[in-house]
Length: 233
Image 1 (spheres, one colour):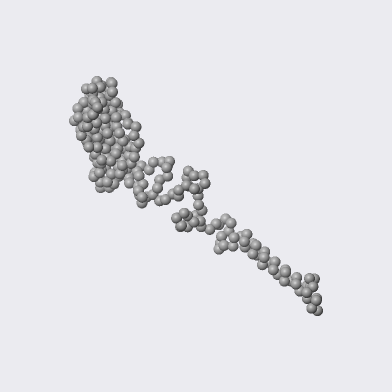
Image 2 (cartoon, rainbow, N blue to C red):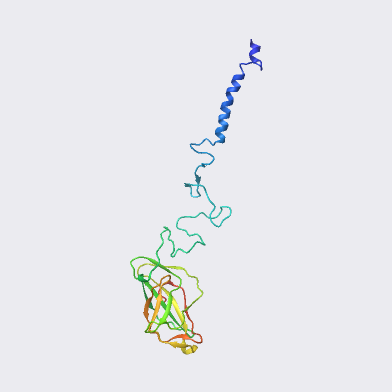
């Protein structure tokens, strides 16, 4: 009787081996199916972002091939995206563009030099909110009938940058032309200088009291610079 219980052919050992198979198969199926609470191969768990917070599946940042570039953070602007009209603050809030109705214009003091006449065109924020200007203003000399004298000013090769204007703050752009008595250019006497803020259509009017300006002939070009902070004086 004792030897029969040790025999490898005993029928008492087979049921035990067969009973273990369903447990092993169930465990194998559990491993293959990821055995998470409601999660399967098409339902990955939340990934971990570089800041330590949980989020969705990670993506490759723009401009990188392997995802090793810097992670985007709130309040940043991706280079190469369309211009945002105004700079983005650290909080992510954008200051609106200054409209013509937000500004007043004046002509700063003459700064002569090297046969040239240089004037700052000053734009001041008269609104009760902060706004921004960026780039070149429009400018045109006009006579008493409102007709433009001479061609549009040419733009100096500068790099525009946004200028944020708090209420009462100013930005200025340089208006420059060769002295007509030296250049020999054909001249006219304007009544006003019309100044149009960047990206606006309605001009601001500045009475012109600085004498004749070149409108044709040799060295008659008038130049404008970009807007920058301050009054230029």
